[in-house]
Amino acid sequence: MAGVERVAHLMRQLASAACRCPAHSQAYSHTYNRVSAGEAHICERKTDYAFEMACSNIRFGAGVTREIGMDLQNMGARNVCLMTDKTLSQLPPVAAVLDSLTKHGVKYKIYEDVRVEPTDKSFKAAIDFAKKGHFDVYVAVGGGSVIDTCKAANLYASHPEAEFLDFVNAPIGKGKPITATLKPLIAVPTTAGTGSETTGVAIFDFEDMKAKTGIANRALKPTLGMVDPLHTLHMPSRVAANSGFDVLCHALESFTALPYNLRSPCPPNPINRPAYQGSNPISDVWARHALMIVAKYLKRAVCDAGDVEARTSMHLASVFAGIGFGNAGVHLCHGMSYPIAGNVKTHRAKGYNVEHPIVPHGLSVVLTSPAVFAFTGKMCPERHLEAAQILGTDLSNIKKEDAGRVLADTLRSFLYDLEVEDGLSAIGYTKEDIPSLVKGTIPQERVTKLSPRAHTEEDLTGLFAASMKLY
Image 1 (tube, rainbow, N blue to C red):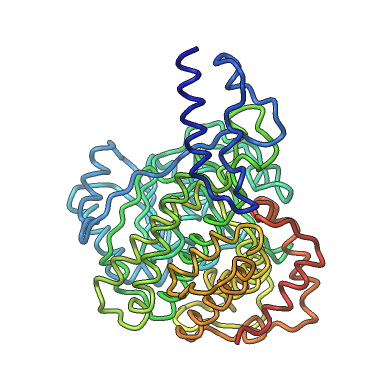
Image 2: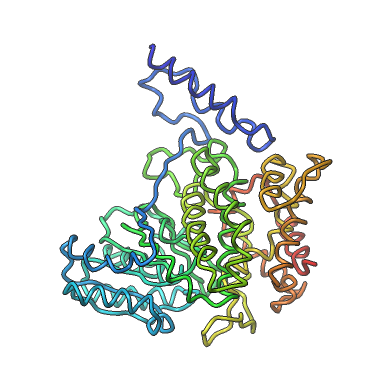
């Protein structure tokens, strides 16, 4: 019993240090009830009692890409699938990877038809390529679109009998557990935003629904994320901005997400514990630090592509935020972003060399952020105020009940300085589109249920309306 009492004492200490705001005040106080050691692993409560930390191995350093050929040699790779997109295939990041593969005699085949902002159709095309190739290792060189596509190709090539919706998140798909062992995947990110090199998440546009959804399972996470900050020097200014907004919202949403032990249901088996578990003491560390880097370096990284320090720091921030949200999850900004991107009409974002209308993911996420955090502020005001302070707001004479408004105003000012489009109306939406945007958000419960504040369809309608104009 002495061991049990020591554990209980440690958990009480952790609880006493936890945030006292309404959504988080019980965040860590009931994770250990008075049960015997033999019963502690049995979940008899409605909400979860544990969280799990999972992340890819990460290697960081300027020029580190030159090592990838040696890594593949060390793995004994005989038939490598290299995935990228048509634009990147002509740029130095892919050239650096190919040079290393050639130098070390690694046999490979290139798939360069990845779609920027992938769809279920583009995922399936990549999956077909992977199935026919019988690859033993995968390499993804690109942003989140490339890395996510490569994850899906690896997954379904490892489950050749599976139907596409088997692993897609419920309620859109069946959300089945992944049972087969996937092939090793090395991710070489070329943008500083998605953090996909750290996570077990793959996002795509489900065209029939005109909304994004995805696959979320720890088994999808890359074996190695090879983070070479030299690759981010090739990002156009607006790509750097939109990628950075994704980092910003990853950090903010995971930091303010529903605490892990208030999330339901409690999994009957650890294989059912979701990748997105709610805020927890470990994810908080990564989210907070990512937010500090964004506050210091994002504007510099956008304004000057040659600012190596800023671009390098934002690449690290992307990794840090990825580790945080990859375990805690995101909530309303991301849930609402999926129909914003999926229902795009004619908007063509600057800096993206694509042939189709596009609202880049980071932009679709950040446009609702002022409205969202004004809405959630009252549930965990201390966290909202801390985030606002990190982003540069003076909290002197600020009342706790104003936390949501303060963070919203902070974000509005931040976005104005970075010349972000003036709300959803500036990217082609009108109030007549709000019902379809709400409809596309409702199935995103994988993330929206992690909002610290419960919400209705009427609430979502109000949030979209408030996001039509920012300034």
